[in-house]
Image 1 (cartoon, helix red, strand yellow):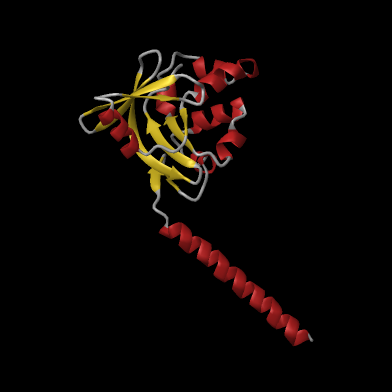
Image 2: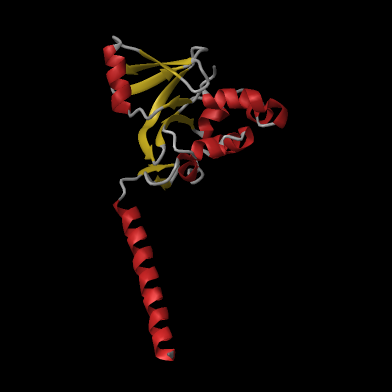
Length: 189
């Protein structure tokens, strides 16, 4: 009896090593994109990846303050235009600190959902829409207003309702529930 249980324990240990090794091997096979010094895994959701980017700490804090973590962990799919910390730093002094206050949650939510399209749109699909639209494409955000997409040379840009322009600096960061495109400017509805 003692020998059987010993073999059973050894078998479970071997199986757990095999399974964890298989999971690690799977992660190694995934085509990752580096964002903020961290690999972004297509098998993880938007939030699971974003929290690892050193360039998106402000965005992650804002998503938490707006109560959007659960939404961005859901099945989606979503296309997120993710401003970097440097993009948030371009806003007037005190703007971010003011927006993350509980009394400004509604405005923060409006701004953040303006950075999200329902559905998954690769940069190739956006380029095709711009080409089909004779140089620009309009897409409705989760917030309800439009973003305008256009190209200049080999670069893809997005213009917000206020006329501010953001360059997509890292495109097609695939997630389990959509895609992220990193941008260099905060978009405002």
